[in-house]
Length: 432
Image 1 (cartoon, helix red, strand yellow):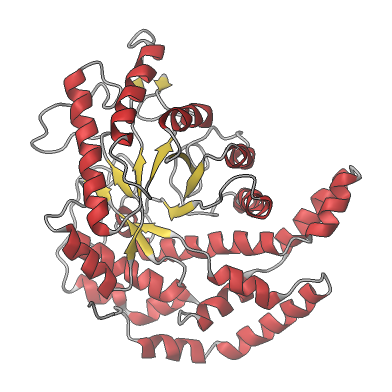
Image 2 (cartoon, one colour):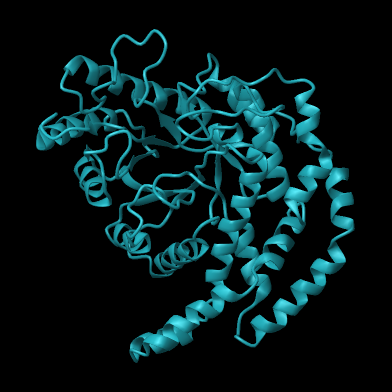
């Protein structure tokens, strides 16, 4: 039996909270009165906010930055155990990130059961495992330069399939329940490949992976508009992702990365469609300005995040199809402390969720039925304008977390302490 060993001293968090709880209670009570006038219970909303669960990405615990360069910082993690340690601190402070998503072979280990035990010691479980066939690895027999699951060579495709199956086996040992498959396959020149044939090859490979998915597991199909394939991408949009998931079977679902769309795409409508079709598997939360920027969640367009959660709450209420989406933060950090960005994003995602819970649904429904367009919009905007922070902070406080997680993190001196014992990170180019 593993003994829980949280990284931060609970007394540190208690001292942090002691100086802030009086002001928080004032803000909470003021918001409670405002919500009561709308017929809403702040305590009921807080209870739902406390149940929100986000996964943190192991790769997001370190400096990742852009595809062109890394600018490492002192004290960042350089191995999986250190990544888990940092993710445990994030969970200890914010209380909504109880699981970590691993990426292979970046996080490859010889003893996944020992990693699972280490996670339990730190108070962490393991979310979906992620395969990587968009990069060549050391000692890899076949190159993915011209694709992986859709490659013209059956030998290359077989190698990519086998890697995914190995990820599943590792995930089983970790206690994971899902595999996320994203490929960079596509073309950069017209005529480079047959566009129809490449999808046929991808489907054939995906079927082979699907056959290895255990009972109780899900296979998430992730789409992306472009990069590194800039002329055509094999799984480029939600329609292709849906087609693949439908072709594979009930254990296959679609994963929506908020940065993987053209700037004008209506992502909240995609959410509604996939849920209506019973194929909404989950989300990778981030934000973007120009493309797949992997910026902190809510940093550019928090209103879109709110609208996405609005559709999710509607989907949960209507239950047109089974509703169990997996949520994960998926970001790269090059100019901020990764742990602070993860904490900031967890709060932004929680805020979007809570704001949606504060929508006056009966009033909104009345306006929608009467086609009162402006008042329906204003009803949504009214909830978006409310301050969700007192609810989120109170849920954190009552769950043993910090009222102000980033302030508590800085007060802990965690990064400076780790800088004195961790080896320097690599300056190599790339995303990890």
